[in-house]
Image 1: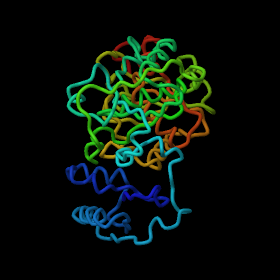
Image 2: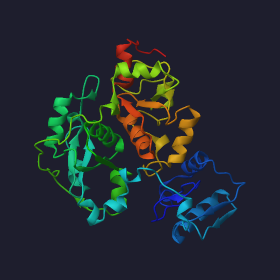
Image 3: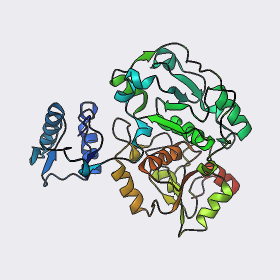
Image 4: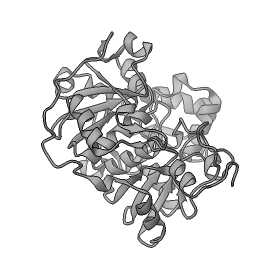
Length: 365
């Protein structure tokens, strides 16, 4: 259950009351299966009274009978669990407060020029970032450092700028976030749940053109300051050649990983990198359901760590994430970062560069 108190009881399972009104029964059953809930067990709920009653009623409709309210939850701080860098994933309710929103340069991120949807409404005071400023074809790797620093400064960002990114879908925001971290921006955050959750929680809305932030004249530190954040093809090969200490992780759909589809209309080759480990993904190249709650917020860290551990993906190793061209891998990287993992990176080229470098033929499995 959600509360206004930071953290949660160790081992607690997250069920947000806000999820259920917009979910069909089949989706609810799938969610409870993913949470590994059994009708034969007893469950205690904590949170505010209204939310408890909503979740309790929903579970009882499905056939869960042994449910009670916990009255003394969140009282002992030593029992609470918090994500190490929780502040990097920003709740809409927190950002909506005037004393918080004014501290940040906020940007909506997407491919191309601002859409009509953006012009009709966006986060109060938000600027806009076209991903073309940060990556380019044909491989869709990040741009060269000289171009990157010019574009970052033009956006009004230097190493000390506090930045919050969001999207109508947060894949694009995560991609830019990782490149800003690579550059050396010290405080980069994502709006958890993106635009939809902002609207749902009554955050302030601007219309019309994006806000223009004052251009910066210098970055303030060496550029890039964290080059280890993004690795190239030779470094990816090094990971594959050192399986005891390193792992290359595929953040792609199961169908892509098994070679049933390439995932993209501009990638012909099917399959995956030999020796890489599947780290979960979503239904296709544009979704990441395995890492998200029904409202597109980050899935509980314990659940992500469980399926990574089952695949042999551990923080003690050097872990590099990749997907087709970097967007899904960036979101997985960001979640690993806020959980507290340190030896992590994104293999920028991903399956597109690998398949072309290795000359994988179309349709290969």
